[in-house]
Every structure is written in structure tokens, then in C-alpha cells.
Length: 160
Image (cartoon, rainbow, N blue to C red):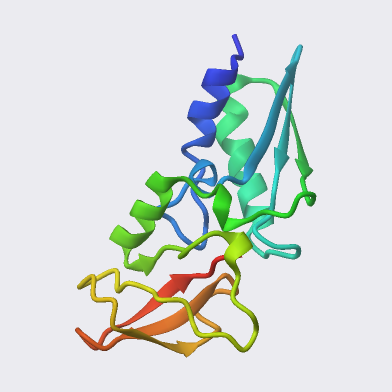
């Protein structure tokens, strides 16, 4: 029998291809789940329009839910746009343990274009004495920072 709980259990095993310690549930990408007879319809939000990982994520969702032996329909949810506010607290802790600084603040608190950089804590030594090196990190959703305490560079998952 296909239940909402079973679907959620399987979706929690679908990992983001760019940050393999985070599931799509941790990221808050699953916006809706509907079950009607033998059809599961999912509303999945991309982290941003044109995210190159979405095709892989959709394939992984289909693979994870294939054990339920039902049809699967995946719809992209573009409104409201995804925000890091939807990321779970557990997901933010997983990011930091993986060596990526989690988003700081809320999406509504965005700094102006010319404002100061976010105060980002080093995921390695936990120092708050860090500096923005580049707005562009290893992927479009990350910036590159460097810790002034341990001198290590690290990615910061941008708040948006």
C-alpha cells in the first residue's frame, strides 16, 4: 500500500547530487505530495531556475519511489521560489559537519548589493573571523570564504 509516510521515507533517501549529505527533504525541495489511486504527484522546487542538478534529482526520485510500483508525476514548483528558509535545521547541521557553512539569517534579511558580507562561521574551527574570497564558489549556490583563524578556505551555502 502506498502511504504518505512511505513516500516521505523514500524521498528522505534522495540525496542532492551537488551536496551528497543533504536529502531533497533536508533542502526543502519537496513542496507537495499527492496520492490518487496508482499515481504519486510530487511538487518539487528547484533551488533556482535552471539548476543543472534537477534532472538528476528527478531521476533519483523516480528510482527511489520505483519500489512502490506506482506511476510518478513530478511537477516543478517555481512559485513561490525556493529559499534557504525551507532548509531543515538538521540539514544545516549536516552541511556544517560536511565542511560547508550553512546559510546565515533568513532570506528576507538579504543584504544590499553593496552591503557587508554575511558573518559566516568557519565549519572547521568554528571561528567567526572569516572573509569572503569570492561570491562564486564550487557551485552557483555557494560562495568561497576563508577562515582567518585556521586559514582554511571553505564554501558557504548562500542565503537566498
